[in-house]
Length: 190
Image (spheres, rainbow, N blue to C red):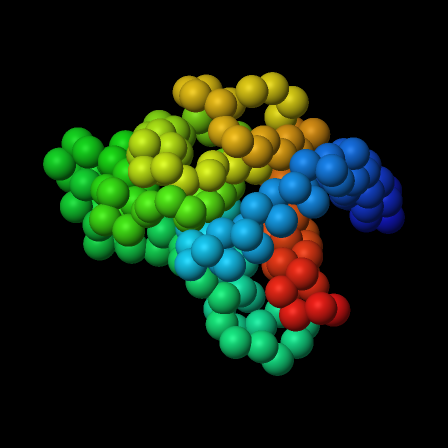
């Protein structure tokens, strides 16, 4: 029984990573956009809801510290960690403004905003991406599913073809780590 679960999980993850592989051209273009933003003094701003907020935080730390080589910190911030703000906004009935309020303070062209979405429609992510567009930022969304997101389209859309929460979390971490590797490679010639 356990070996069947292990085998099924590995097969699901391999299939999911294969769907990311089908998006190689878009991922290459997105990584190049992040590198270009860094060259122009911009930043990569990460948003994540639910458990993917923790993954956004982890990805930001990989850019700020290092993933696979010693290098200067890269300008990446995660907006998923301010629980005091989240609680205050929720108590005031303004939880949907969690990302938008933070982005209004700092987001500007040529920043790139990447949102990690889970299976639940999140108006806070939608409003955050709208705020980023209004500020002139490039926007990207990584989401489970196969279709267009609710709200306005993003400049880059990455779909995770799964209905499994654990597989989506693993794929989001893989995606973020791969993005960091691609950006490091472009910036530092590795």
